[in-house]
Image (cartoon, rainbow, N blue to C red; front, side, top):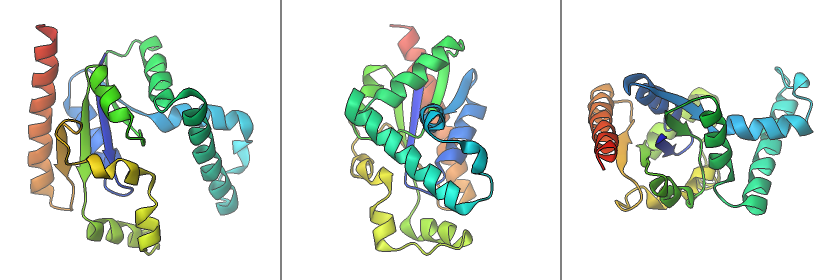
Length: 195
């Protein structure tokens, strides 16, 4: 299976970049590892009450984080990637853009599986503005406690992060980076086929 794993800080635009890669790469589908985690969390929590109730949304978010953490601790850091890939293979997927991996151990693991890692880069100022649109002030504590901060130190490590796509509200820059990324991804998987 061809795998592209997308990482980035909260509000960096991971979902947008993942969707764009999935749309532009023939045969690729987009999958969020959080969907796999939700299956387990749903077994523990009646999500029928989540709706618009902010307390239940917060409770459910904490439950998702705890289920994710418990899975990592009990079965290893790549449990959610493994379960997601198993589900995708059962569905007949041949190529996937995975969004939502948050532990650094996933970076070399994706390489072991023959895949590529992509970092979505957004400046702290852009992230703060995106939070403000939601009525949230980005504090140092919030910024430094993103789950993704575990991966942030590796974003410029060429042995682990294959592609960096800037997403700083400059459409031209992001579009160009997406085009280049698609070319690199297509080349990578075409070379893999020839081995």
